[in-house]
Image 1: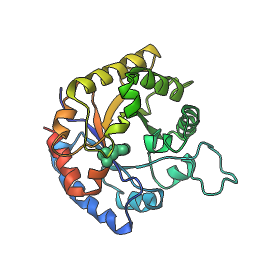
Image 2: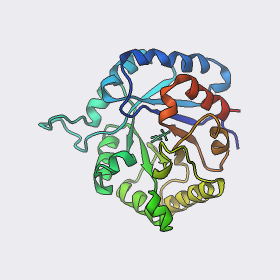
Image 3: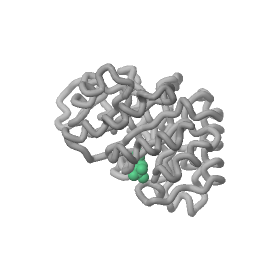
Length: 250
Ligand code: 13P
């Protein structure tokens, strides 16, 4: 399989300030090389940096996304919240939803489903995160968990053109541990099976996220069905992020 059209998402989580935007220059220099013509890079900084990033990225091939949004699609008296409309007006085209760090704070499948619908209303794209916890893995219920997250998260959604799935085993996030090749292959296959079962398009891209670094990126990206990487910690350092892209696009 060719990796030329991989998607690389940089999830900066709750990090970064205005001066960090210039770090992205290293990535901009890299993608000047024709070799990287087909890859897609999406930066997801905190809300406070979205507009600055979108100004900085103007006329470049870099894309911007947010890390979450409020579930209501209309403006209103919702103090402290940011919805898809506001995110769109800041120049972002993508929104990460269902991240385990937010599920862990109480986000339910139903709430994530409402958020997905509100984002689709604004015609933005979604990076929809799913993945099992260590307990669920030990109990051998990963398949059931993924099935529940997909069926409830995407309930009522007919068109998946704007949906990218990110498989992030919760136990792998920030731990330095990644699934074995067999385990990852099996889970990606199962995600495809579940998508098919619920009549979602087979063309939905699936990313992997969790402790991606320049040492493991190549191997992960070669796994059948993986269309990109969702990178947390390593994406904060442009050199590391560039190394991941280089190792993956051969
Ligand atoms: P790490 O790459 O830091 O493990 O984070 C993964 C992640 O949560 C990306 O959304």
